[in-house]
Image 1 (spheres, rainbow, N blue to C red):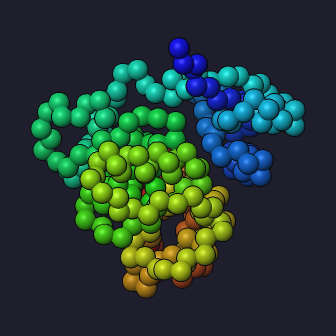
Image 2: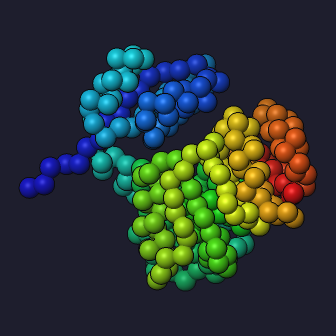
Length: 262
């Protein structure tokens, strides 16, 4: 009988508004996967970081307090697949287990729910997918589905990169996307791109603005998502300083997506 596959989670409550500060701390501690959970009416946010060994989780706990727990790998997978996510009239994202159940009127991507891979439900991803999409995972696969022939997709989390490769194989007969692990703040682009998408916290968007803007070809487009309404002015000022021109902003709930051109 096989042993259950486990990872370890460290969790603690933090003050709302300190999320980006904690992300920097976790990156410095070589922790690459985490999640924030907001509760209505609470001034604190639940931070949970995921690590491969108990020793790593305990080390973080000793430094910052909180609690450590073992996580069964099966917790990452939803028992019941969610309904398809329709992105306008151009794309439908379907859980892998729903594949082939009915003929779709629009192109489909098949994405299993897992630890690192978003399936398009979140507003920040939806805003990018509504028009096209590239970047990492589902965004890059949507770009390929719509005809992009040269795609580079990066993510800081190696688990996300691994999962994205698997999902490309699930949807396409041959690989095309160049998947790579990269820190956006350390990008040194050797090639300029016609379309660049970044779905990140606004603090990282601002901090890495020179690197992100440096990926855009003259006349190209840059689409930014992950921006809260209260943060859009700061992001706008930062990217105008990089020589880009704002051409459109879209909203879904509290989230803003900005489209820029160089």
